[in-house]
Image (tube, rainbow, N blue to C red):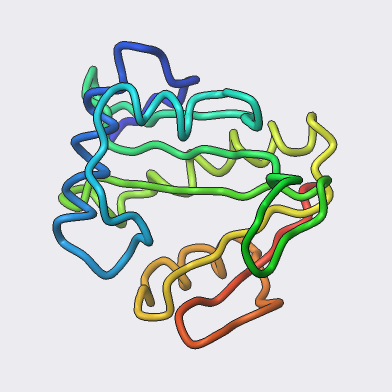
Length: 159
């Protein structure tokens, strides 16, 4: 599969929502439970207040995956708050095209964006039962730094 990686654009939000909604319906790999629409994709992933980057992977003209990189929320009210110079990453690939190098191609661009933005570490927090996601981030060079009953957190230092 020949891939093109570029920054996400408004016209991609529908396809991005379809991919994420299919993953949510399948269950077991994302913490999200509620479906997405164009507006929610823009608000959550497209460079907003905390946004660093959001890239899509295209096969021809079809969006087959996307990856967002966001600064950690300095006002995070929950457990396990992260330092402000850390970023969090989210990767979503169409379930019918997984294991085709899409995530790795997206991460090449996200890692470069993280370095350019001055990110100290990228956090990937993955559901414990998502073994494929854990292998994916481990294969990119992420290392475990925290875990609990529900998730495993890995970090990566952009170089």
